[in-house]
Structure formats: structure tokens, C-alpha cells
Length: 125
Image (cartoon, rainbow, N blue to C red; front, side):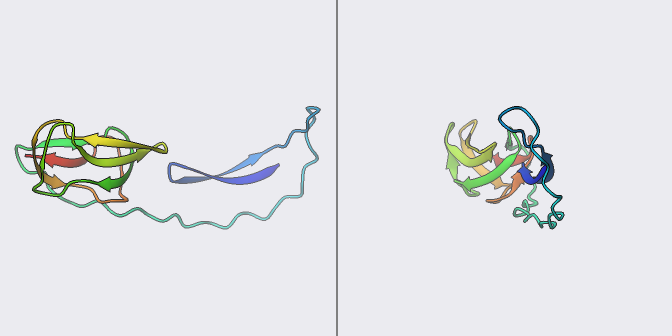
């Protein structure tokens, strides 16, 4: 049995895998290795605690991921379909676009922040 550390969605798991030879028999097990040291996982930048202005339209995260790039700032005028930010999820970059014309009322995330599905990313007035 071999032990491996695997990282999935920011969570680290220790797994054991049996080695199989080409003839289908199990390989001779190797002596047990010392346990792997605990690794401190760095935290992403915390999210801003910004209130969503009353009467504004929110743009929510469609899936969990990490904010890679923010293309707008508070007060910017945006057109429908304009890319507001880029969200990385499952090793893919997803462009989050404005659902309507308007003005950015607030940006509720920072670059590097982890978000969950449904979290408010940007609000438009």
C-alpha cells in the first residue's frame, strides 16, 4: 500500500492505494512509511462585508469557486452581457456577466476570495 496526499476543492485527504502487477497479482507491500506531516492550508482573502443597497439587482455566484479577476469598481456603468468578474470553478475560468444595464452599486468580493453558490458577488443599481 502506498499513501498519497490528495487535494480536492481546497480540502486535503490522505489515501492509501494498493499496487497491482501486470499479471493481476498484488505487488509485495512495502514497509509502512512514517505518517505525513500536517500541512497548513493557506486561506483565501476574506470576503468584504458590504451591505447590498436597497432596490439594487444582485449578481450571485452560480457555483462555488474562487474569484480570479474583478473587472469593475463601484460606480462603473455596465452594459448587459459585460463581464463583471472571472470565477474559477473546477479548473475552468467562468466569466460572470451583467444581467442588465446599470451602475455598479457594490462589489461584495475580493480577488482570491472563495465563494459558495448563491453568494452575492456584485450589486447593480
